[in-house]
Each structure stands twice: as C-alpha cells, then as structure tokens.
Length: 425
Image 1 (cartoon, rainbow, N blue to C red):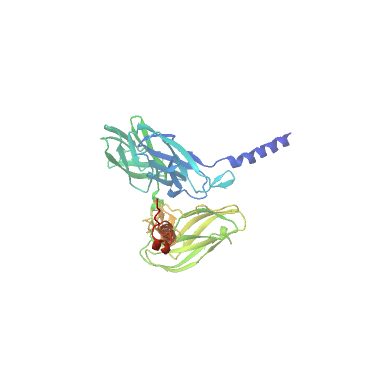
Image 2: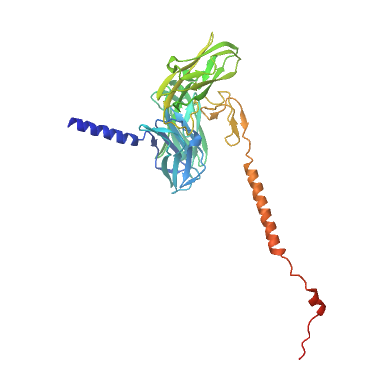
C-alpha cells in the first residue's frame, strides 16, 4: 500500500513539474491615464531580458511607448509612461525571444501580461520608474491634473540611508502647479547595497519607485587591473565549442607589465584561454581575452578568470551551464554593473551599425568596447526594383503594340481603279 502511494506521488511530481512556471510577472491590471507602469519579473532566465526583448501591444498591434528595463538585485523591472495612450483599450506587455526554466524544461515562450488604461487621470507621473544608483540621482515628477497638488516624499529605508537634498532629510512635501515638472534630488548615505524604495504620494494616489543602490566598495575603480564583465553567467550546448570574450583594463596611470592569466581548476579541460600572458598593457588601455568552453556532458561549472601582475590582480566570476537540449535564441551577452561611459565604450546604432567584437550589457545600454562599423546596405532591394521596372516597361510596350499597332487591311488597287458601280433604276 505504501509503495503504491509512493509511486503515485512520484508520478504526480513528474507530471506537474514541467507545468510549474518559474516566471512571476507582478504588475497591476489597470492604470490611470499618464500613470507610470511598473512591472517586476522574477524567474530563472537562461538569457537576460534586454530592452529589445520587451514589446508593447494595443490589441495585436505593436505600439511605440517610452519604457526601459533593468536587472535590479536579481529581478527584472520594466517601467513605461502611459501619457497619450487611449483609455479603455486592451494593452499588453510581451517579453519575447528569451529562454527561461519552466520546471525542468528550457522554454522560450512569450511572457505576456495584459492591462488596461482607465478614463481617470493620474495625479502625477514619475520618470524614471526605477533607478540604479551609485551615489546621487534625480527623479522627475509632473502634475497631470488641472489643479495644484501636494506630493509627499518618503525615502525612509531600513537597510540603506537615502536623503532628499539639499536638506538631507528623509521625508518632505512640496506643491506643484498643473503641468509643471519638479526635479527631486537624492543623496546616497551609508548602508547595505540592494533594492530600496522611494514613496511618492498625493491624496489617494501612491507610487513606489524601486532604487538599486550600490555599496561604495562595489563602485570604486581601483588604480590597476580590471576585468569586464566582473560576473558572467550563461548556458551553452554540451558537445559544442562556444567562445566568450572578456576585457582586461589598465585603470592606472602607468604601464603594467608581465600579466598572467589563469582559470580556476574547476574548469579543468572544459575551458581554454586564448592567451595566458600579456607582455605589457599601457595606462588606460584594454585588451580582449577569449575563453573557449567545451564539455561532453551536461553539468555546471563555476570559478574565476584571474589576471595577476607583480603589483596588481583582478578576477571575474564565471558560471557556465552545459545543457544537452539547449538552443540559443538570444545568446547571452556579458553583463556589468558599470555604464558604457565608465567602460570607455560606445553605443552602436541598432539600425545602421554593429560592434566589431562581442558587446556587453552595460548598466545603461548594450556597449561596444571596440568600434562600431556601418552595416552595408543590401543590394537585394535595388535588384528587385530594377526587375519590377523592367517588367512594367515590357508590359507597356506589349500593350502599345497590341492596342495601337494592329496591321491595317491591305488596299485593293483594282477596286480603286474601277471606281464605284452605278446601279441604274
């Protein structure tokens, strides 16, 4: 009897495990006109959610909207500004072309959350809808009503001090006229890193802004070597060689010589460096380092890439999952907590440029650490246009000869010479 119960329990677990969704999409179902949408997405994502993976729809039609997405403390946050959007229409947010775990399976189904916009106007809008801050930051608030309103600000947090400047207080209130925009300045104090909350309230309308605050030790760039990304997590297919690019920086003011590169013993023969020594690295310069990963079995390996010289050392944490049934939709790109400007990189235009090397996800955008090159225009469109014009020309010629150039009936000269016959009565 007990054995039968055990068999049934095992069967139920195996049956329902693939049905369990590891993705949690937290968001309100309705929003007032002009209100800032805020959504939180939690799950075991194989590929990170980038801005281009988030699409907004009205019905089944994609719409333009001001929005952004970011990873704050391990969860993804999406905000969008609803100003100018029609009320009572059916809207949805769709996260597309990302792979994530659903039970024991890797899936890439679209993650969709529906919402509506009511006829009622929100008291105010907040922009941005979330923030990732190292020290000071600014939030813009706009009064959307026809009358003056009072907004109460509360920056009280249990784990990290956030002050409203210039008074360096944690709570305040201010009045704002109809249509006006107020900039609220904040300073970061002591405490732990993590996601904090700033509350804005006017009457019965409340908006809570998540702010990820970095600890000072996480934001100080040392005068020496630095590896980017500092943390790298991805999944690749087993029995298939996959190469990833890291960048070693010299943040100091002098040249660094005789740099050694090494990987943790945990990678054993599953990872190979493109180079193990760098003779010299000039001040302010950087060099790329490729790592080739290959495993004949499904497993997970973690360890460090380390760069060491006589006076400096730095490391980057690496976590690799080798999966047998993995197929990349959006291959994982290295992620860093620094902005593209801090990395001395450039942001390529999505439509007309591409990066010469593997880009990385900086804190503010996809960042190219080498150079952006123009994407050559395809000649296919020109060829198709020429073919269409030739076909049109041939049709015109054919129609002209068919309609207007028919052969005339030959003239009978004998009948002309005889003249008309006269018929006598």
